[in-house]
Image (cartoon, rainbow, N blue to C red):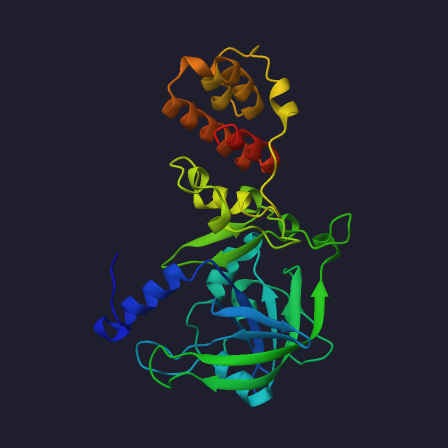
Length: 313
């Protein structure tokens, strides 16, 4: 592993390293007005939410790395105390990239990017009509983190109004990430799309799990179970008891556990293996059981994974 202090490397390398590892980051498409009412639109990936009562978001327009100069967004929000933040979707990512260009002060990035101003109600700057999620914000506090090239300016903002597209909600009135289709920033020129197979659900624990430290040694030290697998197993409230009825249905009708594993059917794999387990060495039996349990866990069938592993105990 490479290990170094920031002062040991050029600032541009620190910048690229930080943004590559702290990723993906949501993108704030920030609209502001200068003191004369001229609009500005620019994306920032140093951005996130930091509380809900009141709702607070923070974004950071850094000083330019090459000369330490400030950006229009930074100067505008200090002058007026207002902005909007629009979420960036895959459908407009190329237009957002265009808006990030270093246009001269006074150039309207709404016009350059072809994006449509969405009139605000509580602040002067408009949002972006093509975005399904827009925040009207007022500046609470500015924190300068260094005042030198590449240093950030934390613009701590209170959300005073939300605009959310009706199409963002599913039939249960929840905002659906598949409907939002958001884009996030990574290092260098990389982005990622937060929809499709990239989105998954992970149920939040409703009780304190036993913890990985309380898993039996033969499970905790398994060569075939990953940290994610162990985390699922350790999320139970208590180590389950072995159920005799679990093995009663393992009739051996499937003939080849390897085929069943390959096609993703762990129960049929176990049914093929268990009645023939004496044909294998103890070490091989453990390997097969742990591979079957791992497949159960990949399908979040945690109780069946436990019952499979208990056969090895």
